[in-house]
Image (cartoon, rainbow, N blue to C red; front, side, top):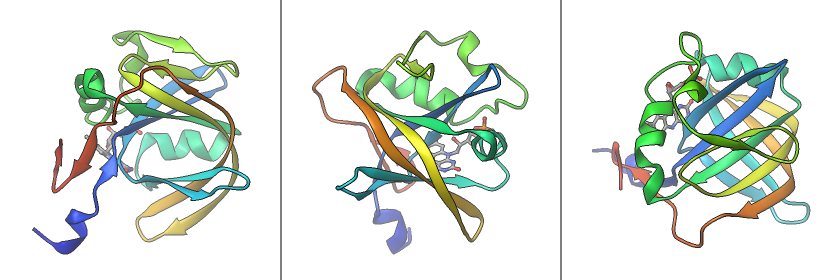
Length: 149
Ligand SMILES: Cc1cc2nc3c(=O)[nH]c(=O)nc-3n(C[C@H](O)[C@H](O)[C@H](O)COP(=O)(O)O)c2cc1C
């Protein structure tokens, strides 16, 4: 185990709805980067299908998963939207701006994509938080050292 694996992150599902195509990707590399205004950053592998969608998207949602969302997070984190419509099997609601919010979400942020930066084998997308909602007041699942805790 390397030191960088000790950098635990929240288990989130980043969702988009681009030209009627909905998808979500499990992301542990998500963090706040500004308070005024509220800005978050999510790091997406260059080879992910979500990267193609996020490049086209003007907004995305960061859905923070609670203990009831473990299986959903595992599903969204192991299959690709390139081959499967992940939302076919999973129940969800639509946010104010039409972004899918999967079951198991305890809180979510609706973000306007502001810019993106290449970082090695990932792209970091920055989102200005336009709406936020807490659905359940409990702690998030966290990911570190190769597992969801
Ligand atoms: C707990 C967990 C955390 C993950 N964190 C990230 C992440 O931060 N960034 C990323 O690009 N992929 C991450 N992944 C992998 C993607 O979720 C996975 O490759 C997914 O199937 C890609 O979906 P897509 O092809 O529909 O975009 C994670 C997977 C799991 C299970």
